[in-house]
Length: 188
Image (cartoon, rainbow, N blue to C red; front, side, top):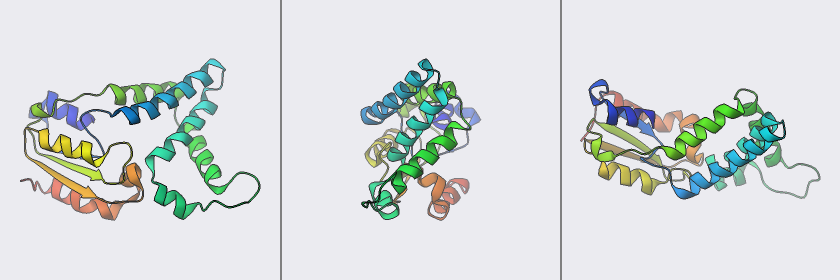
């Protein structure tokens, strides 16, 4: 989002952009998910437990970053007593995030994502867009829409990953051709 905004506002300072799993605006469902997470964090801050609330909000967020297919593969649901493996995983991811992020910083970042607006017609520099078909937060349709509206040359790399929105963190080999094309300046 920041690279696209810089390309819109200061194109002379940008040679090209590689944007992964982003669009020119948030969609209502993603904004709704983030809004619930912010409400959890604000509630926790009001109760004096911002870190605990942030851990819970991040655990919830993890369910939107990844796909149902990955969760089904990794965490088959059984009849075991106590917290399931998926609950333990989500709790651990939430606690790890809360251990390195201030709740107020999370609120600021989350709100900035929802307020982000870009006029694609003002982006004239070459742009490589990477869309993950299984991404729940930034859909393939949204990235296609952005690609169609960009004023400059654009290449859309449509990929598949069970990691969904988190593919940029987990799929180095899958993303390598898109990075290579962007770095070598291959745009049509």
